[in-house]
Length: 371
Image (cartoon, rainbow, N blue to C red; front, side, top):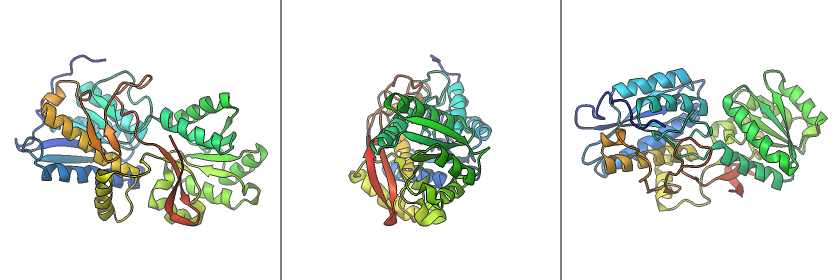
C-alpha cells in the first residue's frame, strides 16, 4: 500500500470558488447508457442538495462529467485529465472492468475515488487507501443470489456467458459456492452458441435455471425470447444476477417475456425518509422509477461531501479519507471498513435483494429473497 501520494497537480479549486468532483459515467454505447443516466441523475441531485445546504465550507460543489462509454482506456485518460483540472476527488462508474482501470490511475495519482456501482472484487491489484467502494462486492451479492437459487430448488445451473473478467468472476463465485452444496454450473459461451443451440443444450443437460451473464440488449434479449418460446423449457427459470431487468429498456424490449427474471438489487425493503424524498426527486428527473444505481450515485456525493467538509478539499488528497466517514445515505448508515479479500475500503454491506418483475404487472417488482 502506498504510504504517501505523489504531489497533486492542483489544489481542488477551479477559480478559487468551487470544489470540483470528477464523475465517470457511461453515457454512450457500448456502455450501458440507461445505467449511466440513472447514475448521473443521482450524482447531480446530491450535488444540487449539497449546494442548497451551503456547499463545502461556503464553496459550491461542481461536477465535471466524463463519458467512459464502457472503455477502460477512455476512463483512465479521463482520470488523468480530471486530475490535471484539479478535482478534489473522483466519483461514479458502473462497469466493473472500466472502474478497475479508473481505480488504477486514481491510486497511482493519489486521488480519492469513490466507486459508486461496480462490484468486481479485485477493483485494484493491490490494497489502496485512495479508492473506496459503495456497491457490495460481487462475491457477497452473487453468493446471496446463489442462496436464492438453492432455496428455489435449482441445482443444475447453466450460465450463458461472454468473454469478460466480470462474467468470469461471477461464474467462479457461483461455481465455488454451489458445488459444496450439491449444485453444478455449466458454461455456454455465446461466442459459440446461438440462442437456438443454447435451448438444445439446456434440454440435453436438464438444467433448471439459465443465468444471463451477457450484455443487454444483445445477446440477452434474443436469448430470452428463444427460451420463452421453446415449449421444452416451459419450466426453466431465467435469471440475471447482474441486474439487466432493473431498467425500463428491458421491459420495453421484452414485455411479458422479461417478467419473472430474478436479479440483484441493492435497496432496502422500505426506504427511510431521506430515501423516500430522494426517490421522489429522482423520479421527477428521470421520468421513471429510479433504479438502485441512481441511489448509489446520490450516496456517493453524500459521502464525498462529508469527506470534503471534514477534511477540506486539499487535505482529502493528503490523507486517508475514508475511516472517519459515518453518514446517513438513502439506503442506510454508510461506514467503510477493510473486508478480507477486498483491496479497497468497502461499505459492508449495502442492503441486497433478489427481485423480479411481477408477471402479473411487469412494471412492478417483487422481492423474492434478501441477504
